[in-house]
Length: 97
Length: 195
Image (cartoon, one colour):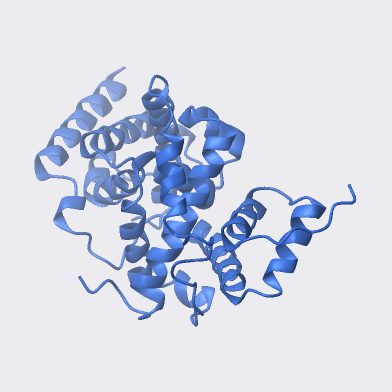
């Protein structure tokens, strides 16, 4: 392919930035993106932000222990009682078998 | 107790871990009843498997590991017969971030905090969860499986019963929207949601 690097819009650049998190860009895609980034500060920020989020998200805490969740995000008392009873019955059966 | 590497009495599990596990499931599957069932199923599976608990991780981490499998099974079952998310809706959502000449409507700005400052910040993660809630359920699920749980693309497509194109469009939409939401609600003020 001897086609020239096309000028791409921010919308296309954003797509390529997002794609680059999922797979390696082709040389042509990479060149188009780089020529866009050379003249577009907004897309440079966008690239930085996606990389930033990509880096921190696997560290999303499994439990946010220092914050009390709102009541609607807690298991209801009735459910706790029910689950506790099911566990007891089951554990008792296991012990007896 | 949660630090010990031996199994505590299952009777205590509900007191110690049920709210955390429930919150973990609720963020991912967004259905109270199903999340409650998953807590119960996780405890029952743990009861069956407690002899195999190696003690290498904490009891809490062990339970979360079991729950992650339960969540994958839940998605697999739920999406087996549900048609894929409407691609058009996702594409419209993507288009909404750009003007007619395909520039960002609202240009991304500079984020001053460093990743390491953010990771430890519980309020940031709360804001993140609120932003995640604003996405359609399946889009948020695809994003969570990929970006947080780091599950490979092929498996996500299988579990959510979607094509790879569909997954890519969902991930792109999620990234655009979350970035925007976090910028407006956190980075611009470097603080929690005000409402």
